[in-house]
Length: 425
Image 1: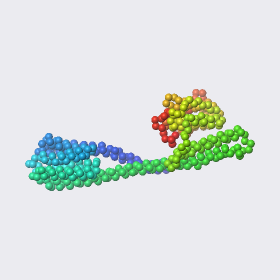
Image 2: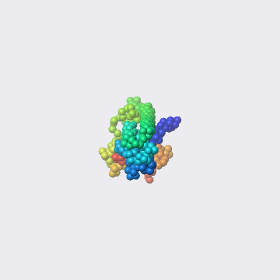
Image 3: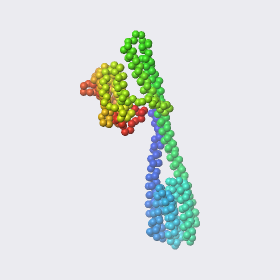
Image 4: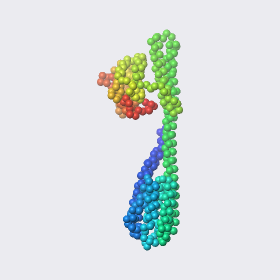
């Protein structure tokens, strides 16, 4: 049911993404359409004016090219295109032969009228209704000027018809532009709504996880800490070594509670301020090893690196990998010697955690938990270590040694190019 709801909620976003390519390619499509129309009109306009109107060939070719190319030029230079087209709309009718044009439509031929309509539509579509209206009025005035300069040729009816047609083209272009802009706004609103819904679902999921961690895990840790802290008062004749052990358990529980509060702050970052305590880093590995020793494990540390030139994300990732490796070693191979090596290697931090006994030697269940192979991920701990190293551009290997031990070897860049957000680590 959850997956079905997720697909339904994601549908508007996918629909918006399907519409966006048309919006992005609209300018290219307009260029292709106007170029095709210009070539077609030019191939008709020049022969018509030369053959049926008796216009001079050279001037007709020049002015005709300006007239049909003006819509294409208007995409980037509207004022230049409007001036060029208006000048052509005045000069082309003035070059006709009076004897040959008496029975023909004038002042504009059909190809020139179509070019005029395309010019008005293009300017309106690209630059808004004001530019389109100006082009319509200026073009109509150009026709009136041509008619006044050649009064012997009747043109009153033609001017009325052509002006009416062009006004209709202008209104249709204006409505089309409004419809397209409304569609773009609706598409953007749908995309924003889908994004906001996705973000809200993410916040709700993070809040649910934080609530579960607080109500279950944090509560249990609090009980462990309280019981360990009060053991010396509740248990009579408690040996000093046992009391120290309980204190160590209580300290570990308090540290875990601190980490839990920080994780809860990250998960609830939308409505709560995250804990601003310093993140764990490479310098804290020594304290981590000491805590593991107090738990009864024999751990040696070889530390040949300085944490000053290491990014916070790398320091935290290395610390967590060591923490998880020690936890796995203590849990699956108790009583064996563990060695931790942290050293510099040019631009990387190299980490090696080795224990002398492989969990596969005597515990098949532990073997299944600890094994990590490509395509066959093992338990959550090693999977998490692999994700931490991979997020920073590093690598990690975990497996058996030749001597029957178990080694976790990681290499993490000191300063990753794009460190992940805190919540991803």
